[in-house]
Image (cartoon, rainbow, N blue to C red; front, side, top):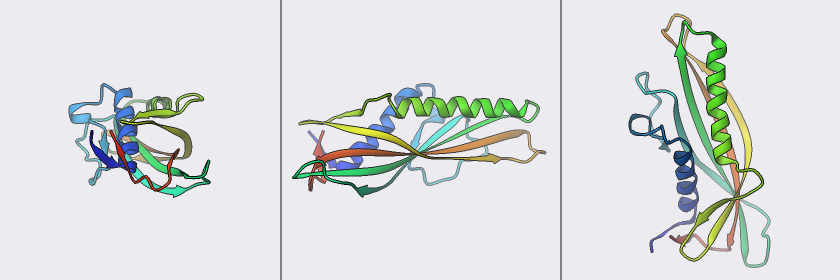
Length: 165
């Protein structure tokens, strides 16, 4: 068994879930967690990136327990040739975004994170959606970027900073 930080267990599980939903995004299009560089013009698109966010404490569900809301953001990038219709770009972005939502927000159920001694339940809420159209009319490609912030609620034992996996 390994002992890892509580937050790391959650964010690693979310990243793994996103990767499992996009098996075609491997090698050059790997879904990168917490990248420190900008998307390069020669990156293979479509592309997804995810970012761990802050957390806040919520109301404790019971004595000795703690509730946390963790923020996690997924960015998606798609592009089309400039010769293609603009609505093709929007359709590609909407399709990628819908797959992200489907992967990260299971209908009426929590995301299960199996640990050595327990299973964490992470309850998803979508929070904010943002959209940027990138590129200029003279470029060969049109690119669109979306950013979807999720908020996940999780309950645990008060003071439990580490978990066994």
